[in-house]
Length: 200
Figure 1 (cartoon, helix red, strand yellow):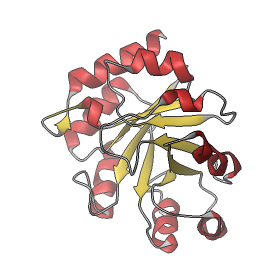
Figure 2 (cartoon, one colour):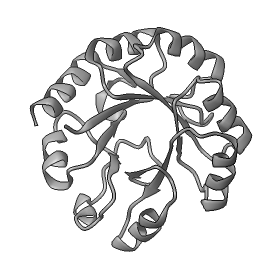
Figure 3 (cartoon, rainbow, N blue to C red):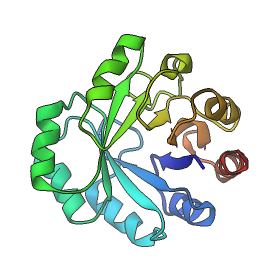
């Protein structure tokens, strides 16, 4: 079954929604420019409320590698999602500081963008539209020949989740804007999305 990551959780009630519906992952965004930004202290508080069956992911954009490793090693998060221009040298430095899994995000505009993703040493690949968090999808047909398991992000919602699962068969889906109403997480949308994935 396709795994689910609910990203950009910021409130206690968001954690409650996750605990009720049990996605595989939730995401805390540590990029300060994001409207979904949470501090490390806030993430610690929310993590304490999270069901232990759910893995928290930290989303970072060009953060100092030491800060990412510290949050992993302090077990505030279980995985790091790198959403900036972090290269192979960066991933190597992070691996020297922690043994926790790494997700590297890649934006997809053409088939040529897939080559770097295929070669990445990250544990997991994530494909998104542009820099992420835009609520817009990209041409999923571009992923037809990609061989590695991957997270699919970018404009996924309860309305198009079935199409996404049928077209590209991702290892996991990563959704944020598509489960929001007026900028906050919407329990009913999350529930519809989870039901659609579990019926697949």
